[in-house]
Length: 213
Image (cartoon, rainbow, N blue to C red; front, side, top):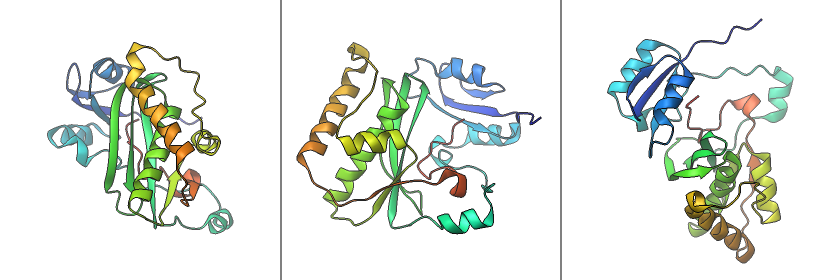
């Protein structure tokens, strides 16, 4: 039986800051805290060292990935296309605080970030991230492709709709204004950008991953 490895959670911004030894303790510090900043680490020392540093230097950075796929499977999938940007979203709770971002796939340089929004879902964030990426690349007249790890968001973009079950309310008004703008953009714009599923099992977490849990 695989014993789950213990993790340590650094909270740079929250109700209380510091290093916490359980996800529940960490969650208590970031729940309902605007602009919370946190990430998990494999050792207490790494988490303590990170606390003294800058949150932005740590998000999206994780330990070296080793694929469990066979060499034949890996060969079939091949390597990522680095003429690309990668997008991802993160939410603490579903619904919960949500943010999304886009990065250059190779360098992981952040190109855009939005949020945190008070009440959102991962799927909405992934959808908005793709549309933001499409608009970003169109503006630059770029032939880069977009990587996402969300099949749901890819389907919503194809159908030019955000098929979420989240109900609109005062808390998520700003988020849904963005959703409406994204749907309008899809209906009123053409694009040649290819949207491709990131092969997590072969390549590890998508470069835009917030690397928190």
